[in-house]
Length: 304
Image 1 (tube, one colour):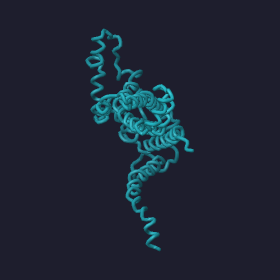
Image 2 (cartoon, rainbow, N blue to C red; image 1 turned 45 degrees about the vertical axis):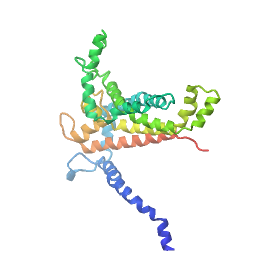
Image 3 (cartoon, rainbow, N blue to C red; image 1 turned 90 degrees about the vertical axis):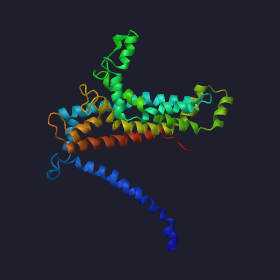
Image 4 (cartoon, one colour; image 1 turned 180 degrees about the vertical axis):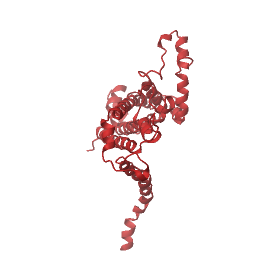
């Protein structure tokens, strides 16, 4: 009897390795970050408990709050650009690639996915060269087309910098949601599509009433991944501008703000403030958690 009971619950043993790594590398650092957000910025041995002072400073201090809310707005804008450009293009690519009449689908999939394999620092540097208003490829094309008036300092103007960086990020990462949508569309029953053809449905009607509703869970997962990745974005801004959010903090995201405050230290002092940095990280975590739950609720499918 005891042996049977042990056998029935022995599958718990397989959870221990995953649980160990989750606690050590995810749960404990998260809990420690939350703890650190309630302490001062002094050295480890001299830190003192300050309660919610770091959060009050982050949300209400004139200078610090201005940087935080500015980075918060920029991050949301960065996210919406990815949702409207990257994911819409990804769905379009996936719909085209799953068409029966599409030839060389594998070749196009490879071409779309190639930018994902490039290092972000390399991609950022290459696009800086391409966007150079003096001798970059885009400037040369505009000159050749007698459209010099459209040449702009794309990365040096606060009006364009964040949009351009977001579009470069969309170009690099569009391959991942494309493959996810492609896999979701391939799982749709051919019999269902054939029945729609017999009923006289147009291509647009099949997309609107059959394909998109059936891949709603995939859309939800892609939206969550986009949301989380963009709220943690740092490297693309760092490679194309710098961690200071130039020009004029127009490209400052929560990720770059956290790096300046909690790791590198802000100019001109240059001394990191781990307590305030942990408050930024903790606030971001709760934003991500709430956003992910809302997206899941909006994209879940009802089961009969």
